[in-house]
Structures are given as structure tokens and as C-alpha cells.
Length: 275
Image 1: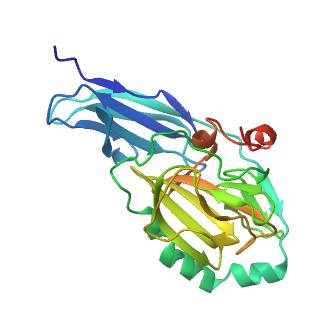
Image 2 (image 1 turned 120 degrees about the vertical axis):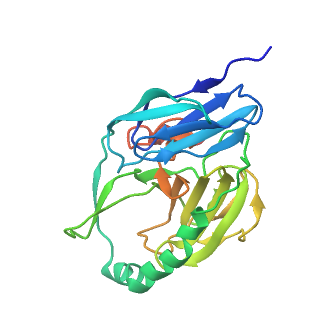
Image 3 (image 1 turned 45 degrees about the vertical axis):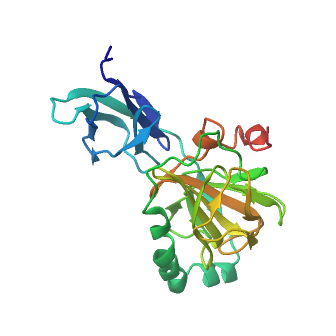
């Protein structure tokens, strides 16, 4: 007996969380459709016996209701809504040695970063490379949350922090959080020794400021394998790992993947100690 099509649509997400949509029991050869009023039509990827689509949110995503239209290709679409809930993001005033700022946050650093980093997250495999839970890249002390507004040396302008800063002893192994293919492994002036891993279906993990690099571009790596060691290369005030997850170039709260919730100053003392 043919089962009717089933769409699983989340009702709400918090800024920084990724909305995940599933479609099952579709007629053979018929693709699902999902349109978001601000994003247009989302891409569906094969998943188990159906399809999956992703909608990233972050600190820049406006809160409130978004209209969804979903159904089957070539048929009238149904309507639903997705509510993006607000999250309180902290403000950070960071003091950095002027010589570090001058040597790592300059025109050459910006041009190099723009040349190599974005393209590492622009193309992803349609296949999901992982089928196990994510692991912590390193254990340690949280020094900066995802999405914080950061002012450096009392500058009048600020920027948003794209991931988590986790302080740990220099030389500590940094682990791949899940299976994937390395799309970038090189030293950049701004972010130091940097690795980007494609986990498939648009999901990437990013690792900055490492002391050593153990992987090469194009290499497939398994969950829990070392990609490098904790360091303080690039724009950095001490040994730590800057880590983030992204859907293509849209940065996400890494905690949802690592531990199922945002990692904050309030909970990091036990979430980042390992399990």
C-alpha cells in the first residue's frame, strides 16, 4: 500500500540554529518542494528513504514568523510558518597587543582570506558523509561565545564572532568533529593555521589558529582523527581553538551539533570538559 507523502517541518528555531526539513513517502520520480518567503526554494538532498533540506539562521537573522510553502513538484503547495526566536548575545571588549593587530588585521590579510577561505565552503557533496554523533574538537575553557559582538582595543566599530573560542594548552590535538573531506588546510595571516572540512549536504566545520596542521586538502578524514594542534597563530591572544560549523557560508551555533544546545559561559564548564 502506498503511504501518503509526509513532511516534517519544525515550528520554531532560535537564532544560530539550523532548521531541518524532512520529506518521506514520495511518489517515485517526484521531488519535494519547500519555499521560504525570504530565501526562495531550498535544495533537497537524498536522506535515508526520503529527502532533507536545511535553512540556516544566525545572529543576523531577523526574528519573527517566516512563511513556508511545501508540497510536491507540479502540485499546489501547502502553507506553514517557521518562527525564529531571539537569543541574547553578549558583548566583548577584547584587548590585543597592537603589534598583533597590525601584523594580522591588515589589507594583505583580508585579501588573502578572501582569496582562499570562502571558496572552501562554496561547494559540498550531495552525500552526507557522517552517520554518527559529532564529537568535541577539543576540551577546554570557553573564552568567546558564538555571535558575540566584539570590540577590539576600544575601536568604535565591532564585528560578530563566528564561532566558539576554546582555550586549551598549546600542542593539544584538535579532532575532526565528524567524517568529511578537507577543503582547506593552510596558514592564513588572519586565522593562522586553518582547516575546513566538508561533511556533505552543505555542512562544514572550521578550525582556526592551530599550531600544526596534520591534514591536506582533498583528504578524507574520519570522526575523531587529529587535524592539527591547538596554537596561537594569526589574530590570537593565546593558545586556543576557534571553531565553528556552517551551512555553506552561513555560520551556525556549533553547540547544536556538538552537544544539542548552545554552548555558553553558563554551561561550558561541563559541556566542554568531554564526556
